[in-house]
Length: 212
Ligand code: TMP
Image (cartoon, rainbow, N blue to C red):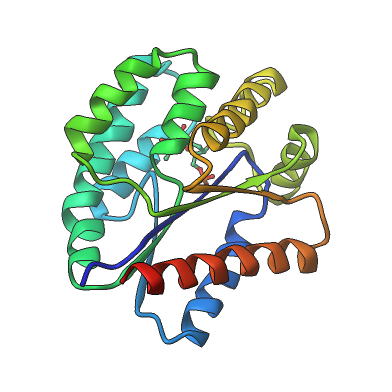
């Protein structure tokens, strides 16, 4: 039996970490064996690539190098963690995946989405998430939350307009693929956000059991 692949997405400061903990609790309650991981990262090599991508430095990383580094980390992560776990019947809960590439490198940086699609096919073959939760919040609120938490990483140093494009990129993805993507209004109280996440997960579980 193949496990299910769930990804969690959103712009900076949407509350991914807190809500991923909530999802892990929900999986434990339902006795579902899972692996929680993240991108960029998820293996020692891919975590090194994450450092290269997130640490602010003097050398500007050009857009195509950034895109290729994202997919290099992803290839390793898929090979070492995601595919073996799904193959062993475990669910994989991943903090960001390729929707982030369409949103940040595509909508944010303005890279051609057909190029991203090409790399997606090359690295992932037919593998796509089964369910994607997109936590959505006005950009200004998210950036304020993120800056209260820690010093800005290389992405967080971008201007508000960049994150507006990223947010719109995510909303466009949700519109294009409504069967897979659920947009959660993350500006609500944490209790309400988690109620919404729970109802999406419950519906997904029912669908999974019907199909199985
Ligand atoms: P985070 O996981 O702590 O939010 O940080 C990861 C950063 O990397 C975030 O700013 C989004 C960015 N990112 C991309 O630009 N493209 C990608 O494909 C992924 C996975 C992340």
